[in-house]
Every structure is written in C-alpha cells, then in structure tokens.
Length: 280
Image (cartoon, rainbow, N blue to C red; front, side, top):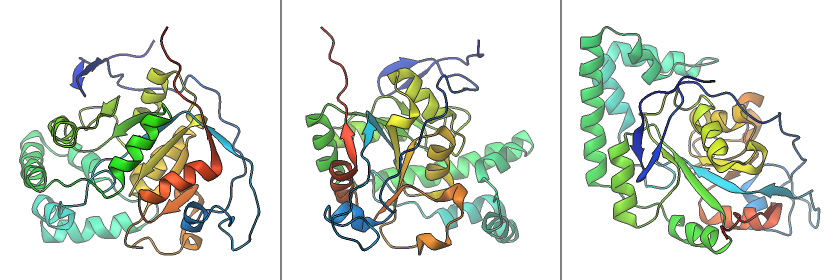
C-alpha cells in the first residue's frame, strides 16, 4: 500500500496525494492512428500524411488532461528571466546547455538539491514571477469552446500544472471552468513523472490508454503522457518545436496542433468519445 502525504485542497475537492504512484493498469495496447500532424486535426478528409480518404482505426477516449500555463492560458511568464534570476547568468547558461542535451535538467529537481536557505530564496523568486503572471492571466483562445464541447459529450477533464495551487484556484474562479482533479506543484512527484497523470486515471477509474494528455511542452507534458501510457497531443502555437522528424521517440507525441480549436476536430476524427457513467 503506497504511503500517503497530508491531504491538499485542490479544485475544491479533497484528495489524498500519494508520494509515489504505480499504475494499477496493465500496459495499454496502442492503436495505429494517422500520422502526427495538425493536418489530421484540421482536415478530417486527410490522413495527416498528405493522403486523402485514408482512415485509421479509431481510439477510445474517456478523458482529457490539460497542462495549464501555455495550454489553457496564454503564456505570460518570462521563464528565461525567471531562471536567470534563480540561477544567475553563469548558472542559467549551464542549465540551458544541460537542458539541450539528452535527458536535460529539470529546474525544480535541481533546486531540490540545494541547501534549505538557497531553496527558499529560489522558491520566493519563482513565486514572484508567478504572481506577476496571475495579474496578466488570459484564457487561451479555443479553451472555452473545447470545454463546452467536452461537457456536451460528458467527457472528463483534468489538469496537471507545475504552477502552485493558488494559481489553479484563481484560474477556476476567473474563467468559470473547473477541471477535476486539478493537480498543482504541491503534488509530488510532478511532471514529467507520470505519477500525477496515473493518479488522475486512478481517481477516474479509467486506464491511461483511454486518456489524452495535452500540453505545450515536449519534455514535461508529452513525456508525462507517454510514460503513463496515454495518448499525447503537443500544442505548438508558434512552431517553436520545428519538424516532428527531429523528435526522438521518447518525446514524439501522437498528435501536434497549433491551436486548441484543432483539438476538437482531432477528437471527432480519430476517437470514439466514451461519456462518463451517470450516477443513478
């Protein structure tokens, strides 16, 4: 039986967060979907590889789990400036070099290796930048429409963010949409570890193979989803990740879109949406 940490208040629901989570499900059998491309989302008649009329086997989907910053909300935090403030110029240069190498370095894990006074200073700097971001918080175009669509189909939606729980509460209150469960940085271990996504699947009583993880980070969101055995969708608004041909297998998502609006078409084209059972 896994150890459990003290309960946190998340999204106005009380959950007990396990310190470590192992999957209660067997490894999923992956189906062959169309090639990863925003074309597959925007044009149902195309298979995403330039062909017309090619139909791939449809997957079963019971829930979607979203990243928050840069996915459900417009990116407003200057992460470069925040990392420089935490690490210093020399440390930031070393961090970027390590991040670009195989495996990379996770800044939150990096901070955890510091002495307590240095950790406290780093977290205070991060909190300062995050508070500034909350003042400029904006909903991502297409997010409200996608949530209404999911509600109409009775499809669950959850949230996993490396931001703090206060930011999640403000997001829910300001935009009038709720994601349950909503796991923040207070949940350990955080993305890209698959534990938070597996925890949500356990609460939903749904296998990861019938869930999709959607986010704007290859290393955090896509890797988290792939390690859990879920479908993955990369939101790349600006094309900063370049050609999918350059991705290694460990970070290659099942789908790539340039807007949340494309996700709706993606779902209708490639999946059978399975509604949440209604209580009688």
